[in-house]
Image 1: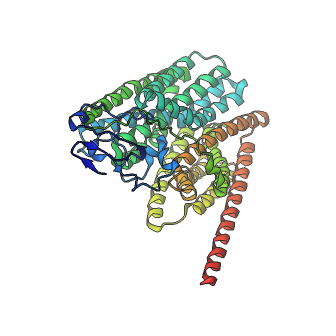
Image 2 (image 1 turned 135 degrees about the vertical axis):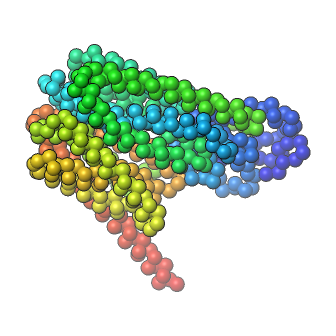
Length: 504
């Protein structure tokens, strides 16, 4: 980029957004230009010295997909320079408090959503005539936490990250508070399923985006820390819920957790405070895009469906991940139906989540060292989880059931934690964020549908085995189709390579 004494005279790219500056700009004027307002996050880009400036000749191969980036790509992209609020300055105490506040938000909302099915046991006792509806509530909440991702993306574009997090905290706190007065299962389905699920998505999705944009190139470390908040909450909350239920009942427990979720609001305000502090520190060094540049953000790119293997994997992934989440939601009530107490069900539930954390870390290291393709590993582990779901329905006694929960936790952690690697391998980095958004949305819809079906089946046949057998069989079938498709693609590549070799 040629920068003369009087300013910028060439076309330039700022964050892959191409702009044209045809007039000269005096340096003294640059200092008065307000900060760049990034529409998708309501926060400014990095300081002027970190901004990527390239000439049009250097970016002659720039494609439309490079220009139209999505919010998720900002947070997770692997580009050499990511947008950052704090630039490259040394980390301060405020930055560590920022990640602590974000961690607490995810710890509360994701942890409670994962442990909510423990509370469902008490709801089944109160609303024994509405078994199907009560069993659907956790699936609705977990499903909406993924399916509402595109909606939350629009809210982030409109109001910014901190506002969405604060709104999510208000929504979740009010949803639990209103649920205290619920006397009908349908009412709880709306408050604890729909409202709580949307509130969870507000925090779950936005937190990752906010942390990514705040720390920039240093975000992967902090995103990894943030990723442990949900499993940690799923380990802690079952015991806390059991303790509160024994003392105060399920209504008192909801009131207590409503107060806990209310603390997300001051955390969101603190995140906003950190954002404003970072803006003030970098304000004088930031260049603004010309007002006539209007760059849309692609939240949905239908071209990913042209990839046949992606379509097949999306089918296998959604049915498998949906089945795993349904298993999580019905496990406590399944154990309770076998005669185990609430505390024993909570213990097995927490142990399953404890064992799900190490495998994803170990597998991530193995994949980094070996370079193995994760598609086949995903299929094998998914088949193993489905087979274990058959076995757990046949065993009796708490110790064998606990062993099955440990084994299923080990198997569950890898696909849930690393399935995005398959999408990256199949789609590539250019359309990865769009493919992830589509996958999360479809996955959430499938979880909701499977939750509805499982609730009806359990209520109709008064058996937890039937839905487990059904969804396990579907998971096995879709993963076998995925294996056949991968094998077919592998054979095609071998034939193509043989033709090239024979021509030489």
